Image (cartoon, rainbow, N blue to C red; front, top):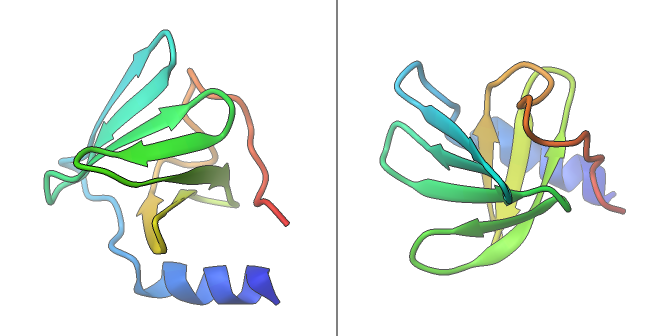
Length: 91
């Protein structure tokens, strides 16, 4: 049921645009979305948003999903970002 709920949220989530910037670092990656939202994605599938909020990220078929403080983001970067491991959707 949770998976269906999250997939529904993702359909309404803002998708990544060509202006998105992804930078790898020793802790994982920093993603700056087209709307200037900055997401920090950790190597342990953890996530945070600049300005507050923590959550997790996961790989899906053609995008990377991020949920932070009840808000879902979609980073359309294929199946992953080179500097991050594969993370599945938590149960």
